[in-house]
Every structure is written in structure tokens, then in C-alpha cells.
Image (cartoon, rainbow, N blue to C red; front, side):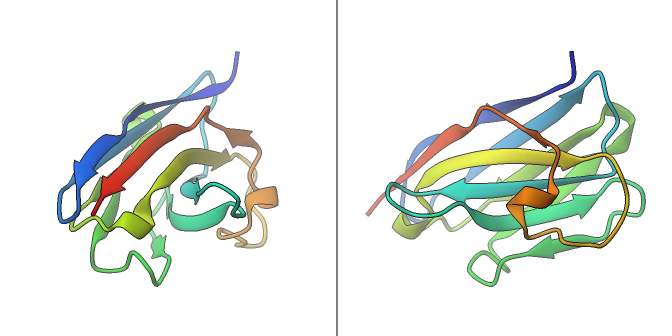
Length: 124
């Protein structure tokens, strides 16, 4: 069964760090991304990476603090989150797309697969 399995997340103080991981099971994505959703808010793009060439993208709000990386041999990606802020709090979702096409990496509907989500809480 094709699925995304996430790990990581948790609770930290502002300024702390966390690492999220996501692995694809039973399929090989072309691109993988992270989105997050705070209570009462829409799901928003955080970061994405192409597994073929490693091109990566970041939301302005996390640029310079978060680093996305991949292990193509494992169909996996990671999100290192440093200098976390209370505004980073939310449920973080892993997403993946198999087919190539227009590069709408920041659009949730463009992705075919989603993980179950993992909570990240940053205390002031």
C-alpha cells in the first residue's frame, strides 16, 4: 500500500530545534514537500524538494531557519528546523507527487499523497 510515514515533531521552547522525517512506502515520488496547518488556519506551504536533482524551495517565513534534505535511495526527506518560533506551531504534513508536470510545488492540491501529520509546538 502506497503511503507516507512521518516521524519527528514534538514540543520545544522558542529558539529550539526539531527534525522531521518522511518516507515513502511502496512508491517512488518525484517531489516531496512539507505543509503545516495551525488551528483555524489554511494549510500552508513550508518547503519542497525534487528527489531527482535536489532543487529545493522554502516559504519566506522559514527561509534561513529550516533546511530540507533528501535521501533518494530511501525515498525519504527530512526537515531540519532551527530557531523555532511560536508562529511555527501547527500540524506538519508530508506530501508527495509521483508524476512530473507543471511545478506547482506550493499548491496542496498538486500533491497525490499525504502523511498523517505530526504536531510541532513551540512555546514562547
